[in-house]
Length: 283
Image (cartoon, rainbow, N blue to C red; front, side, top):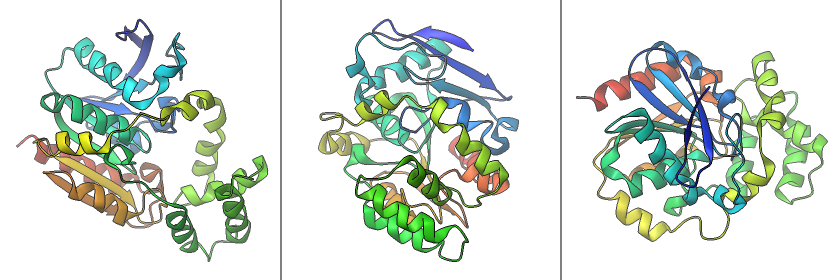
């Protein structure tokens, strides 16, 4: 791991894997260590992935001010990483909840973004979010799975805020396109990789100003890829399309049979789509 210092003095860590031009990768969770991204389905064969551990996760230090876990307050961390890497502009990839951080960065520093790849990403910073009905709709697509009855019942308890640890275990297959050995191993690492306190503060009151962000994003010239899983409940592909519609230069790709971690579900489809987008973005 390599470290650099954020503007508030917090020491942050990242690891680099792969070859080629840098692609800065922001993990979701919210606030899960970047280890879960792996090599993004083989994307590291095409680009040097710079995988940032957000403050308080992985090898990055815990900040003195816990309020700095709020999404908008982590935007300067991304800018500090750009400066540390000596890059004039960033190719930026964000997964899940980190979509808000990446979009917030693009709104604050539009001239520092060469391209933006949003994978199964949230858009709360733009005033777009998924709903319980989206979760139920996606879950219903899995009705033929042997684990579906238990997952559907547990999902209702999760949405009501009464889920037990066993319920969360039952819900987990809904996040993957295939509930196989690789998915099970990936899921099993989540607890130790996540900072729950930081995750609770990530979207705290004041984190998002959709009107301001929409105004800033409307002038962005960098191309954006929205990559969504067909079976994902957060966001559903049509919600990803709503986010794409707010971006001046955007492309939506939906992975057939994909869930919330599409690089695990179909690595070839994921890598082909992202590399093609990044190649086009350089033209």
